[in-house]
Image (tube, rainbow, N blue to C red; front, side, top):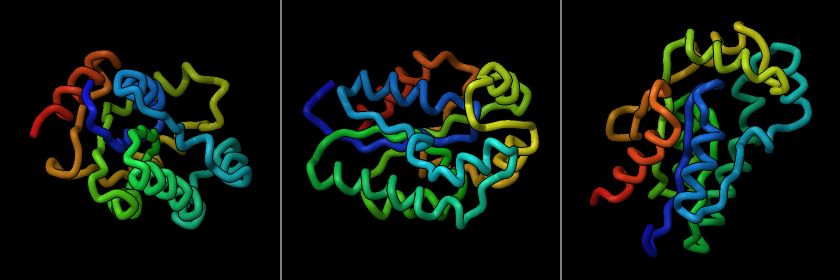
Length: 170
């Protein structure tokens, strides 16, 4: 793309395609990709696998770990894309504190579509309608100036293209 470096958070509830879009975007930017799900504690993964939503306490160390990645990449002026639900404004603020120039891509969609996508992923630890409903209830959508919001009804390739156009804007 260019010599510019970017640290990008791809956020949204489960089923929004954060990991898939994040990987495509990272490849396009020649950036590293980190799936936030890979950094949950074993206790949190077990909790979610049993259908129990995580609370703020469960997410604190996880978010600190992801913030550490953004901070490290910022210090090295390297590009990074992280997929992470970042449901609440204070979670995103914690991540942005590690890199004030953090860009956020917010993937959103209708509950029916999100549920269909989740049901198509039987191997994933995220289970049950209750957990999706919990995430949707906890979601504090970013403001217009905080993030680029794109519907998951678009193809992943269209989402990446729209994000690339957004990154090119001054």
